[in-house]
Length: 447
Image 1 (cartoon, rainbow, N blue to C red):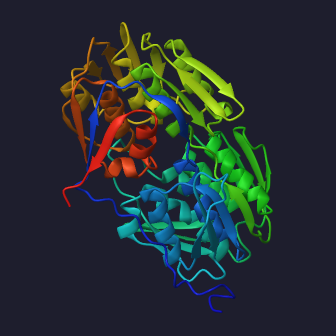
Image 2 (image 1 turned 90 degrees about the vertical axis):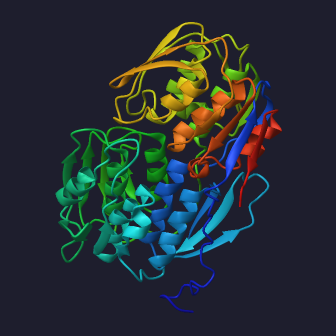
Image 3 (image 1 turned 135 degrees about the horizontal axis):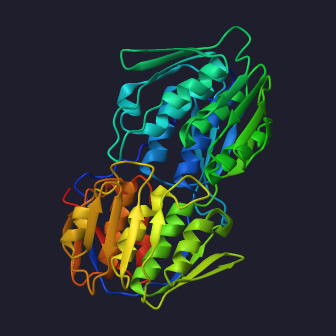
């Protein structure tokens, strides 16, 4: 045994490397009908994984989706000294089962070559700082959908007593002897990532840490619930004021990743735009109030039940006026999918994007398929059309990619979506799931 009593990290995480030349072919016009399982949430998984750094005991995550981003994060954890083991999933588990153990943190640096590919890597900053007392993490760099600075991450940690320095493209962080003393920080704007980093760091603080105007997303609740299962003391879970009483140590735990509300919403749009009826097995309606309300307003039938949510549509969609905002409002991660769905609505819809300044990159690609969309700043007017026509299109980011898939499902003829590695970051077994409910879809590789 090495690494402080843990098994040696020899069976390293096998990174999923989708072929950049892959493309998805869709022959549209089929109504979707059947049962479609919802995977564990990508955005929750990327927050739960770094919790393994907070304890020297095993942390097991169930219902973990097989996604490129999740595998990249596992590779980063390996570099920091975390051993990872994939287990056989139970019959009731949709995803994989992963056990992680950080018996000893062997490195406190998250290098540029990993962080630049996946912004979620910044979430090791708080846990490393809390557990090892220091961290050196590369700045994430640019993002296609808009400016996503990490200044709020740093200000929150600084308010809790950390010493921070940004130099040569890296953040260097350290804590006083004895750990973070604690403090109060009020976010000037809601930030999901900064809330996550701060909560993880605060769980091992030497005092009490208070976060005001904290993010309330279901993924934040999932993170807090895992930390509590590991022995953390957190008040106000699910509210915008979190009070974290630091503990000297945390212990291991076994925890199931929440279902992916964005994946569920995306497939709900797929049922709606094709005039079909799909059971989203495992979806949690309690996490999706704004999404489901918007679907109902568009004339879609939404029926939650004990196993998930049934989405039914006669294909006659009503126009909507929507504005994205932090939870519990309508999520920015569903804007592109609803835009695709509303290209088939009877009338003009108005969408306003308030979170990211560059999240309409899918509009020119939808226009290639016959969509009528006019963008003015952060507002897009979507006028419904009688038909969409299949065309070669290029994916630009994760959610934009899904909007093109949705348009292809409803279009006449064949749609070819290129750069599908974006999709592989956030949708597990997409072609398999859609094929099982009637879509004519396949992945084609030139390699």
